[in-house]
Image 1 (cartoon, one colour):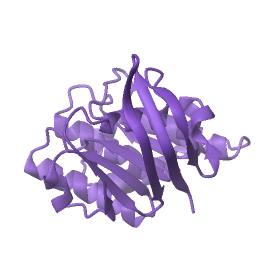
Image 2 (tube, helix red, strand yellow):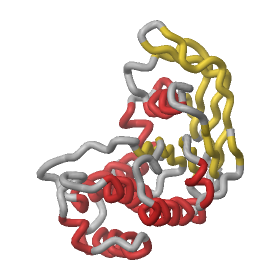
Image 3 (tube, one colour):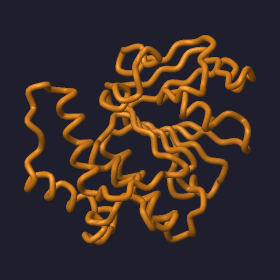
Image 4 (cartoon, helix red, strand yellow):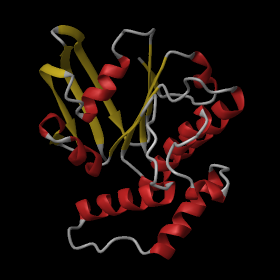
Amino acid sequence: MSELDIRDLKVSIEGKQILNGVNLNVKQGEVHAIMGPNGTGKSTLAYTLMGHPSYIVDSGKVTFKGKDLLDMPVDERSRLGLFLAFQYPVSIPGVTVANFLRTAVNARRKAMNPEDKGIAIPEFRKLLMEKMAVLKMDSSFAGRYLNEGFSGGEKKRAEVLQMAVLQPEIAILDETDSGLDIDALRIVSEGVNLLRSQNIGVLLITHYQRMLNYVKPDVVH
């Protein structure tokens, strides 16, 4: 079973220490919620785990699937099965949701098997349509440019769709519930619960209790 293990992690940015000895262990199939007000280091943890260069690891150890995560470049962390859903997803004009996801799927497949030739278009389309149907997303969504002109709720649903298609071992959700109305929150939460049932570990970062009304975490930090 894949797991993310954090030991005594200390992180600073621009000389100011933000994280001071974080310890955390997340296994596949578990949901861990990290709650707290703004400025307490929740997003710092998320970006540090994914390798953002602005965050300096002063000490500590992070292993993922038994490997030293802190020594890996960002793309290698992602291909290994670690996923970050951004609080503010960026738009990519000219790149459709479908093309973006197919490229990402092929990158993961090739990381696991260098001889892999990539997913066939009919197979990928079937996979994408199945996941979109489960998430109650219209099929036309796949042909739109990623996040361009998307509402806040559509951006967050696109992030959940990425997780559903890519099937990471551990997903980090950085305030995915921020800015959502109640209907969008419910739909996104259903997506998170679906991923959990598929044995994906989730690190849910939020400062709203309302998300936990729909997603029941195993542990609250």
